Image 1: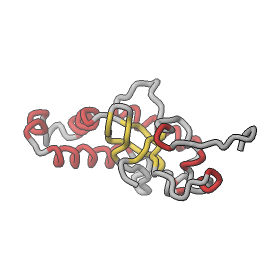
Image 2 (image 1 turned 180 degrees about the vertical axis):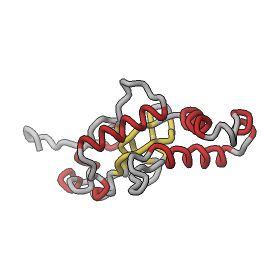
Image 3 (image 1 turned 120 degrees about the horizontal axis):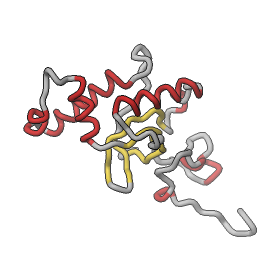
Length: 157
């Protein structure tokens, strides 16, 4: 309550955002009368083309653009995400990245996610490792220097 008025948060307009709103944080959601907050992911929402270009750079001897143009989109996504899984992890021995579909103002997009709002135990990167992980993702995917990771709603709960 603020000034006698009840403050109501709508969860549909909160994301994308650079910080996770507290009502989407499972540890704090009860303070906002939210019993089951929507799942959110922190990372980079990218286009499928960015993932395909990344895969083609790594697998240029196995695949061509024409191969991907003719292939089933599910297979293309599998190969593209596989390349991302293999080459974007800061520490391949201890993978942390997830590759969900997220909601953006432009529709559903693949996401290279560093954190999942529902798995607090995965929020264990110190600032230096997080910065390095972000740098690896930006460099490998050739993202603009100005693009920063954001929180996005997951396509699933």
